[in-house]
Length: 244
Image (cartoon, rainbow, N blue to C red):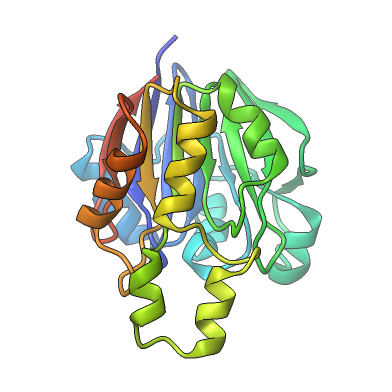
């Protein structure tokens, strides 16, 4: 059965991804306005009609901006951890999942995998597709689960040299470099080389506007990983639709 992955946005200025399989449709994160999400989905020939759920990875605005509005507008449950909801305090149509637990939304099997960020956060494995952003390290369960995947959306946030030489204040550089910050191009690519060489495709996302460039992320990946299809996700527009 074919599953479609529609990447609506990926970056510190907003993240969102629509997952569809047969009669099941879920949205992972909504870090843009509802108007912008609908506009970009229309460009991809997609929509939020018949949405079954909204899944939230963590509370940061670039992931959570419109999740509550979309949940209420389309009358669908909003899935998050209890720790995330202590920050957001949503109280309508909320369902809770636990980190490293498995749950099901109609045809889709979903597992929440812990990531390492400065707020409680996770990624998701949805059937044979993984979504992992906002993590300072590759967690143990990320290493374990990737061997079972066909495709992955993985953070490739910064080029190390650009971040070191850039104009960010020292404390912010240290946060990004830390275990609860963000993955560099090298760390993301090395992870795929070591654990994910069998993947059909890799979507590199959450690129920094100031400390990375699409060409640098792609060149770094291709210099480290051989014979794996790599696509760089846009910070400024919808990126496309992939099938598994």
